[in-house]
Amino acid sequence: RFAQPAEFVTAGFRELFGAGAVCAVEWPEKAAGALPAADLAIELQVHGEGRAARLAAASDLGVRCLTRVQQEWSTRSAAG
Image (cartoon, rainbow, N blue to C red; front, side):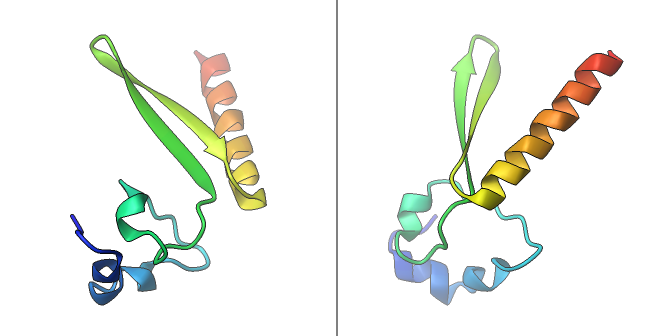
């Protein structure tokens, strides 16, 4: 876990973000200013013994990604 945003850059993680990459960042505020803008935000909440995820698109790419996730979920739900 980083204490300063500059640690994100010096650790070499910036190079992981690019075309065709999928990157998930826990606590993005720890790397404020060093990360590209998020395309998709995921919020996890505890529900009893399980978890619930809330996804929100933050860009056009995020909308396309979320639409794909919803289509996959619908297909799997319909297949039973």
